[in-house]
Length: 499
Image (cartoon, rainbow, N blue to C red; front, side, top):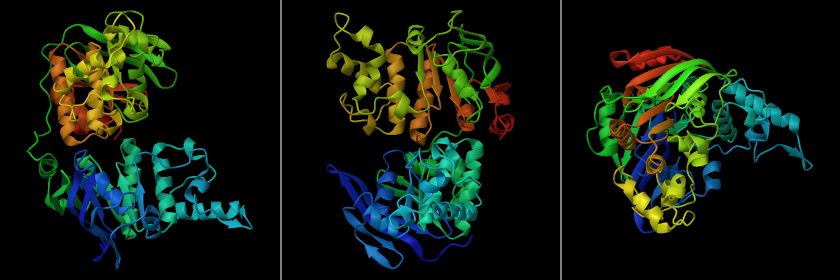
């Protein structure tokens, strides 16, 4: 590793408040060329606020930012870009209907006499991709690319503007294992070219793979700053949550498992999945583990009436006819959490009380049609403490203001309020911090003890290992293994799924 002695960016004493609530208490940050700094912390610790100040999105109340030899008390987004600072957010900022070349040159298209010189735009884009050893046609429409490729195009756009510092915010949250490996190789090449990288993640295995240094924020202050080689996962977790976390371990096998609530038999759908035979019983947590594209998520959708079977059968709580649509699935007592909670799960601009009660309006309505804010508030309060939802404890709080982990708890509360006794959860802790993960896993184990049958569909091998009594493994649309007890190890999961 060739690390620059002088930081590309050096922030000192950064303080920031929102509405009188201080979220950063004099934080320092150094980003060196040729080095990857992992920035960790629970949701709400101040990570996003800090990097938004560094990239000119927010203005600090106090503190300075030094870029090279130049010192600033505040930056605009435009100034930050011109100084070589680029932030790659979780949500893509690309123009999905435009070509790769147009996206890479976006805002800086070569022109002559007011007309775009398309040949030059494609040449420039091809040169950047070639330097990055990426083989993607510049004529392809960005919306047609895989998620990992779209992320690389965003990075290529930043580098086309001579970015010296790249801030990557949860870059692998929606990527498959293979796409993440490609991204890691890409990051290593950028580091070798002396680009400075700040890498925000909740995945501690990624920190060990690619980071040179780790900085942990807790409650707006730095709780840990060290070389990655000098600290282990327990120290990182303790710095994040302020206490020693339980070691990664397997749950006790369910003793209360009773009747079968989900039963797929030789189920198939076109080329997505075939010959799927698996069961979930009430009182147990089962994981269906597979990389993105394995067909696991599509199997889960059949339990909630979002996808039909073309062969085989599915019984839900003994019903021979599977739900044909979501409303019917709710009547069967099935609750469903999609992978994309912001776009497909929650109503982000509506109050948390509405989000919890929305599937139970028929039961909560007075005279069969009148929904009151009081009945919704009571429903929310019923689950606020039980699921350890960290919020203002205000039923009117807007859903989108909660952290990712607490949004997920609200969506879980929705189906518990609906008295669902079968839960199908797709990527339930994606983008969720360590502390919230522990809360969600414990809540699921408690529900299983109460007789709820739970299916977790996940591409996270640690989640399958840590949360489930039994694990089915999928690869390329087929079940390749069923593991129980000591058979479930992280290495066996990765190998069976093709990792």
